[in-house]
Amino acid sequence: MTDRAALESVLAWPSLASRRWEASPLGFPNSLPSHSGLDGEVWLLRADDGAMRVVKRRRAEDTAIAFSTALAAAQRAADHGLGPRVLDHDDALEAILFEHPGQGWRSAGLSDLLAPGTLAKAATGLRQFHAQPHLARPAPEVRAAMAQADRIAGDRLGALVSAWQPLREWVARIEPALQSGAPDAVPLHREVFASNFLIGPHGDLLLIDFDHAADGDPMADLAALALETAQVDDEHDTLINLYFGRTSPHLLARLRLHAILEDVRWGCWAWERYASPSAPAIVDYLTYARMRLGRALHHVTAWNAGDRLGEIAHEIAAAPRDPFRRSAPL
Image (cartoon, rainbow, N blue to C red; front, side, top):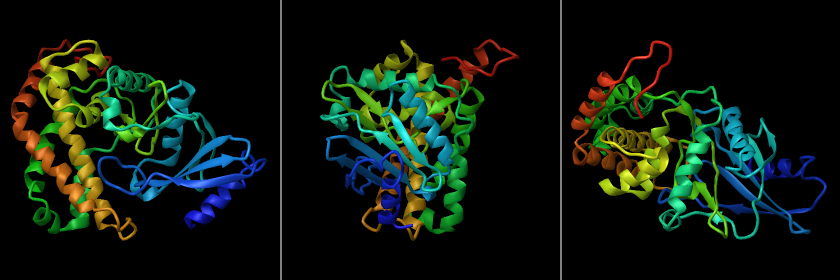
């Protein structure tokens, strides 16, 4: 179905049919610094009486997560004031209708998250979302994403992205180590970019875009936020403290190793989009893939990933064992 036909189908929903709506596209295709417009179509609907709605129709090929999972995540965020209110949806179209939060709300940028007090709100919002019931869908492994990229690329990927082979070896060490001592899984957003926060006129935040949501280690979302907002030790410690109320070398090690996996995961995603004939030609997915994978390999060295793995192994070995609950020291 074409984008226009899908929009006309949405406008015929009973929840919209009582008003006349003017639709305009939101977002734009780009790869940096946000993912806005890359995984679906978003329309802003305005009625003659001033009412506003937002429709998001996702592209199913961009994520392995079922639409039902993305919808459940959006509804849970909305029910607890962490995201816009969900008004309607269509399983066949994979479209969700949201209430617009009102005048003055917009997509956040990095400068917004770095403003005094806003980063704390972002960390608190993630923690509150993580406290919701499971989504019953485990997050796919990064090793699986790398294997899929290999199947698509053949020998081309290693030739185009010099970081590929060493990263395969590092991910094969990092991911099992993090899994062996992971805390109980929680609902994850898994696309934590500044542009996936809405910021209101008084600095309030809402989470949007749950197309990649799944259950996993909460540190994965925090690591993604760190890649957006933090660069040095003190900034990482500040972010960890905002989320956990304390920091430690063990938590810092976990955050940095998860950050490496996040870059690899999105590098694989970008490579798949680059290789897909349906991907928007305007987006330079190959450059994005090389950037994310190159940064991951840089952080392996800069953050002494081997030492960080040793810290995790030591912490797990020293932790008391509970035979009835899989948990890890946080």
